[in-house]
Each structure stands twice: as structure tokens, then as C-alpha cells.
Length: 219
Image 1: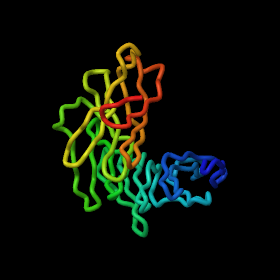
Image 2: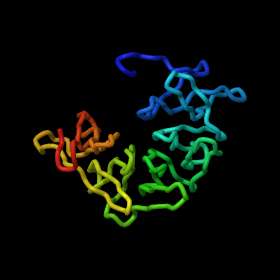
Image 3: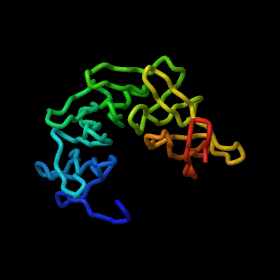
């Protein structure tokens, strides 16, 4: 959807899914590709006019996010490894047992290694968040400078958070207790640091859409 218009994106005859887009109108995700009698997900890139290309990689792959320089974050699902695609280069395999979730304006990929949020700079420098006082956590989106997502502040109760380098996690405002939706997760953020996401009951049901204009305000 762009400027009030709906455009069907190209695929290879078996459908697919878009996971992220940038302000240029580029989009990324995956399409189904028949292969040796079966069908698998292949990470894909769509130009603003709807044309699709398959991103390099082996086995099952998916793309999650793309920045304005067309640097893409995603994962090899078969090998459980985060991936980064840089235009004109081969795909970059990041460490084992990781997932790529988001990419910021510098090309830094944000993701997970197990329950720990991590980030990888373009030069390969790794940033871990194991010492910031959370039980488990995960980024889910990024703008030009920071990432957003969730972090468990106590067992079964998550907070929406900002992630920043150097290693810092900022918890965002929570809903009024009368709503009985104590667990929150931020999903996307723009370059004005306005984040959107959801809050849930303790059982993880009945989600409410939420917006955080800043870290201390929730709508």
C-alpha cells in the first residue's frame, strides 16, 4: 500500500510474505520456491514497482528488514544463522544460533543469540546485552540509530524497550494498571523515535495496539 494505492507484488506463482520496507518503497520478505519436489522459503527483495528478486543464500532463508541503503537483515532458517545482505556483495553469515531481526541506518544488524539481544556492526563488531539486567529479550525493529523490541522485566511480564549502542536498554511506559495488560512489546519505530506495538494480558491474550511518542508516554 502506497499513497492510497494497493499494488500486488510479483512472486513466483506460490505466494510469499513481506516483512519490512523502507522510505524508498523497497520491501523485503520471502517467497515460496519449488525445489527438488518440495517447497521452501527464499529471502526476497521487491523494488518499488513490485518486481521481485531472490536474495543469495542456501536452504531456507527470509529477510526481515531493509534500510535506505538497501542493506538487509534476515536469517538462514535451516542453519539458524543471522544474515546480512549488502548491495553488490555476497551474503554475510553471522554467528551460529542467531536470528537477524532488524537493520539500522548504519547497516548494523540487530537480532538474537538464544535469549540475548545482540547487534553486529558492518565491520563485524558484536555488541551483546547480557549484562543489562533482563531475563530474555529481543529486538524487532530499528530506525536510523536505535532498535526497539521487548525485554522480560520479571518472569512472564515483558516491557517494550529501546536498545542503543553502547549497550543500554530503556524500558518504555506501561499501560494504566486498570487495563490489566502488563506485558508489552514494541514492533516498529520511525526516525522521530515514535514506536508502535502491543500490550497483552498476563496470559498473552487480548492484545491492544499501542503507540509510544517517547519513552515516558503511551497511547
